[in-house]
Image (cartoon, rainbow, N blue to C red; front, side, top):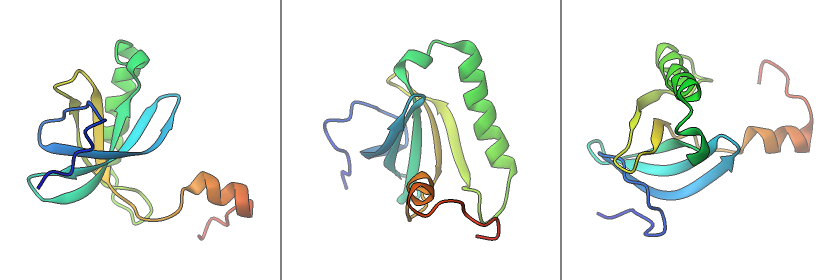
Length: 115
């Protein structure tokens, strides 16, 4: 089973990177497959210009570690964090199917806290 989009040159041991889902100033989020469990995941990859910033890398790992401590239906599960073969820093997490929250807010305005 080969899920990999050949245009993506990111190699993370144990994962296949399929396609980009979103990107921003700090990096990109990709659809991935965690091979050992054959499950779809979201993989956040730190931007190339930040992967040499030791302070930001420390914050990136901290974000993943904090997420791993949380268990709530409205918070994604953290699965893995690390440094890839291709020198990328990654954070693998639960893939949530649905609309991008920022797009929903732009369209509908404020969201009530109970939602």
